[in-house]
Image 1: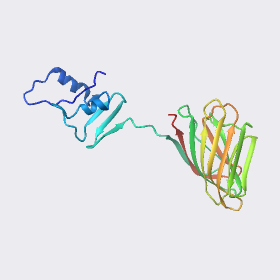
Image 2 (image 1 turned 180 degrees about the vertical axis):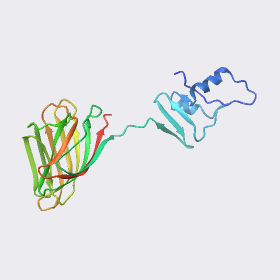
Image 3 (image 1 turned 90 degrees about the vertical axis):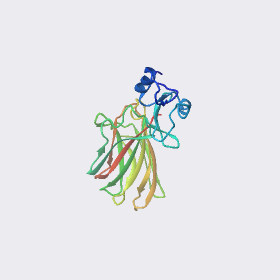
Image 4 (image 1 turned 180 degrees about the horizontal axis):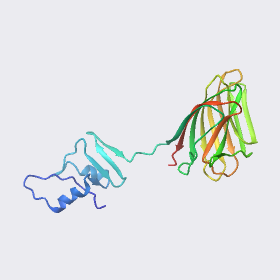
Length: 244
């Protein structure tokens, strides 16, 4: 690489500076090293700068910028990719349904996590969802789902219907759900699994778990969520799982 250095030179009084000396400094700004070995060897030797706090460098082997904090080298960037990337969020109040924004799901991520907090205006009802594409719910009978709330007399399962049933919703309690949405954009079956808290008909809090599938090979860009009757109030946040 043309800009790589093997030292960071210092010059003495009266020394003649050559064009090569000046071009190396002008052409890089920040010293560029092949790797950490050449970086460490580039400071502190004869006629070399002493390594000190605030020194910058660039490593061409890993394409990162580093700084010296007085004790060790630390990386400035690029930042390491996060396992989760925030995509969008919304709050809603007394609505009959809520839909994720169009193109919430995209080719950028294969899988997603949704965190839902919701209360319902109707007691003893279910909280359901459908996959969505181009602003329209898919209500074909390609949904299979099953869920159970442990420690309470609540369970549910549906097959070959037009929705996924996620939970039993009690008007007096907040339902907290985390959903993993797998391969919604791919032209293959889409999957959903979830955990959270639910209320049974006696208002007892129960640990909720469930799973569902859309069996068709449809590409989706969003989902909609709704109670079986009445309205819902709450919020959601959507994250993408990093592919690597």
